Length: 401
Image (tube, rainbow, N blue to C red):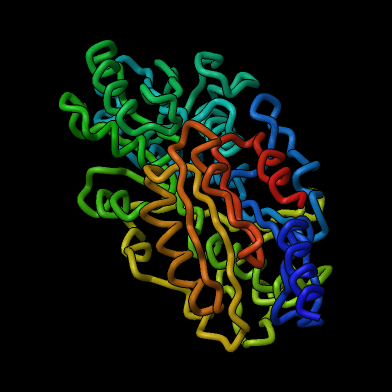
């Protein structure tokens, strides 16, 4: 009998099998390929066309995506800018009085869906949209400033790629801003960025033109502080708490054996079995198996609402069975993920009795995450934030056995 027991144990380990705990059948065997998998923040997609990678999203019936409404966020940022300009003093905005509003644009990643959506939203709002999100592919636009219509010109749009190849790079933005200030001088009337990290990088340039309006995106803690100090004009909140709690809630629901609509409604639009429910509104899109948090504008009138420490009171400590989740973050240096998203995950995970193991990459090489995506049999579920949006298969291939 002892020999038989050892043989069964060895077979289980070689086959990549684990014994699930807390499920419908505590003695059931679960293959890694059948465990819950949630992609978050970076939606599996083609970096060129933006098409959603449904092969990754259909990896199994427990695979979902949690993020934010990218297209809606781009529109929110665009409206944030035009609302500001509509009531601004035209003489202060048009620095050289040439009747043209010139702006420079920090692009995060030309192949990233979120970056594309923000660039499109900005250009559409300012009338410079020509059908492309690529740098330089723009037309002359127009915008109302203080009751008067001005021409709008995108002086330059540039992807902020670091010397190490990392995208959304704040240091690259600092360098670019220094060059723009020298090259364009008083033709720069406004600075717009695809995220807060790059906007804050621009403000670090020693020759940043004082008083020029600058807009970011993410509502990071330092950006909110900068709005309060009058340095940053505005940003967009992608509701990090709803995203982080949503990622964990979907995992919790799947780990508790929920199926169908219960996966993306329990604890999200209706209270779950533990009495928890995310407070902010979210939207589920069945065609892409995605749960999306909604965005909101942040400026000098409401920035105090977004100060650090305001967590969702709708989520309290539950009696859910403890589960282990392996979670990857594509770049340990990413400002939004490190200063906003990860702290939110670390706050809500214990409340849902989810034990997180977090591994972080370098933002450049997928292997920096994949090489740490190991000991998979030890976990009940996985949450993946990829370096490249078309790398979903690299992770699912490791879950085949």
